[in-house]
Image (cartoon, rainbow, N blue to C red; front, side):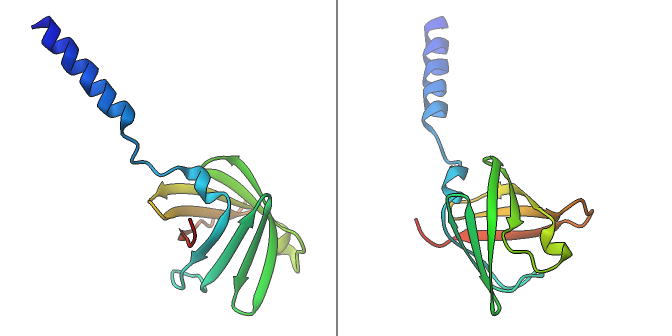
Length: 124
């Protein structure tokens, strides 16, 4: 009985250690992304490379510095702010992962307003 229990525990541990359904959050650090129109957003195309994020929406293009605190938290800072609100950093927290997207919460500066949304990765 002890041998069967030991074999089952070993097998179960092996299966759990080999299973990796959780998408790797590192893959969201570079590439092309999209925030679809709706929920307070215009359709936004995002391109990330190294520490730069370029956002294209409406008739605007903004360039931001992106600093990753860890795989689930990053800060955006406008490279060329046009007004006082653009000077505030945007703190982003990834709250959920899927295969080709993640859900996030964003806060501008020290405000209490939390903007929620979903970003979809457009390339692999």
